[in-house]
Length: 180
Picture 1 (tube, rainbow, N blue to C red):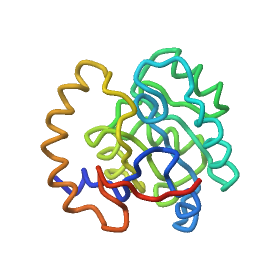
Picture 2 (picture 1 turned 90 degrees about the vertical axis):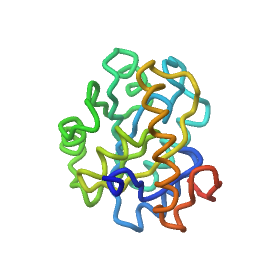
Picture 3 (picture 1 turned 180 degrees about the horizontal axis):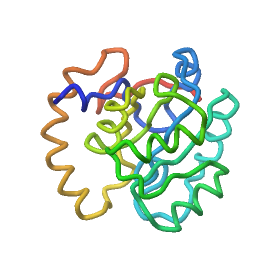
């Protein structure tokens, strides 16, 4: 079971993800979690650096889609403001929403990466589909109440996950140099 929770890469932030390296790996599209990955949980405002990172990802030839378990109009508004596709109520780690996003972008699992902040939804869902998975730390300590409970279990698993992550990917808590 643990192997499904190990991300292929860890980045200290979305902006630190090495987009050129992803393209060299054959990645053509990024599926992006919303809350606490792109924006703080519940935030309506877009962080200042995010539009520039979206533009850089596009400049690297990457197609983008927000895939969120959130089902509010806020998620759709943020996606529109960023000019990216969105799949809401994705029910990650189930595959339906992730597959729908790949259909929209016209990509297959081998050429798609998933970026998220949670092991039990984002990383598990991506790994089960054979996506390249990138774990980032949550942007905020503020979260949905059930997510706070899941984080307790996640903290226990993280000590085991850290040991299995490739050394070149960086590890949670150890900054990794990345470029956009």
